[in-house]
Length: 307
Image 1 (spheres, one colour):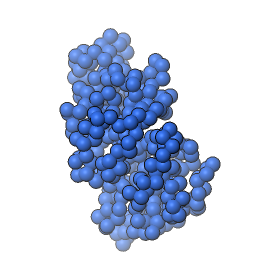
Image 2: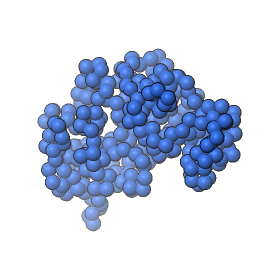
Image 3: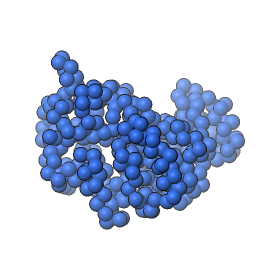
Image 4: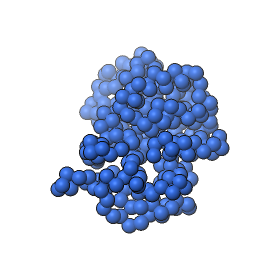
């Protein structure tokens, strides 16, 4: 049996730090045959079977070496790993319905299409109001401004972004606050998230990887660079490992039934201070950085658990 990874353009991924490629390399090391494709390479044929236009991955060294694309029946894959980065746009939505078709036919998809579709990585935390900083979601400038006036220092986030893109720190005194809100909400036509600023961001935005609800025992604390509130590595943040704390475990225990209910097998949660800030289920990262600092090959047990 073969394995399929649905990813972004493989030639655009960073060999040394991309989590998807790191996992794929372990599959190759274990002599498992793997293929890769894009989010738009899934089809349902006239016989109601799902087919995939995909490439076999020969090896991953200084670059990823793949064969020309061929058409394969989705049933030929033991497991299909969905590792496509956000945004969760129309193409992602359409692919999720095709992934449902695979799951309904007995295929093993991680994470499942219906679960990806029903879980927004920003909005998902609202399932756990006791674990999060004061938060609202709205497209109303008045509603958002009242929240900012009350909480004094607020983070504004788009609901479909990643890597710190489109995030603003605002205060009631910010002279650009109205234009920021107008731009982010598309003149009141798009909801955004507003969240009370968590000052413990200076100690790190912790990424914790969960496999079947169980954490890797080290978090990657991403520290923002000077004069920056975004700790994302893509925005210049520095990553340092920390052991999982008792509060981290409390949060994990609280969300575990939710993850099990929706069969989220590979998850990356973000924690700042004592607060849960995101539940990432599309393409959680951070594994390479954790392994590089701990010198422990967690990827071996991850592949064993999921393959």
